[in-house]
Length: 125
Picture 1 (cartoon, helix red, strand yellow):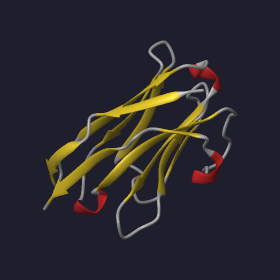
Picture 2 (cartoon, rainbow, N blue to C red; picture 1 turned 120 degrees about the vertical axis):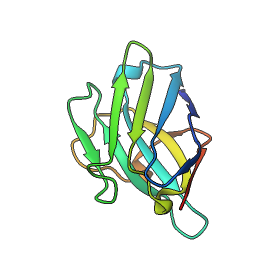
Picture 3 (cartoon, helix red, strand yellow; picture 1 turned 60 degrees about the horizontal axis):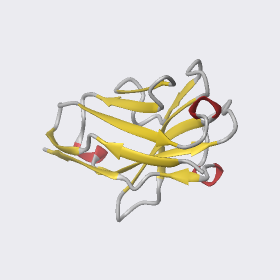
């Protein structure tokens, strides 16, 4: 059983930056591929970024490529997403997710067994 706790959300102006963190409790963190998803009331949950066990492979949605960077620190049991050049359309609740096998391509939400509670990111224009 893995418990995920996100932090770092908030209100930022367009063009600004935020870094989200997700701390994992329980399990062996390095045995889990990790990802970030986001959701708004108008849209289904969508993939944002994913990272393999070792961090050697990363995957991004086209909408965030070049602006967001996912990383992990296996010693701290934490995954991050650095979000730069934020746009109002990035406004959403961001969720951290974990799956107990490695990922080799862009994953889908249904693959992930463990989810955090979400953190709100609001980008004002």
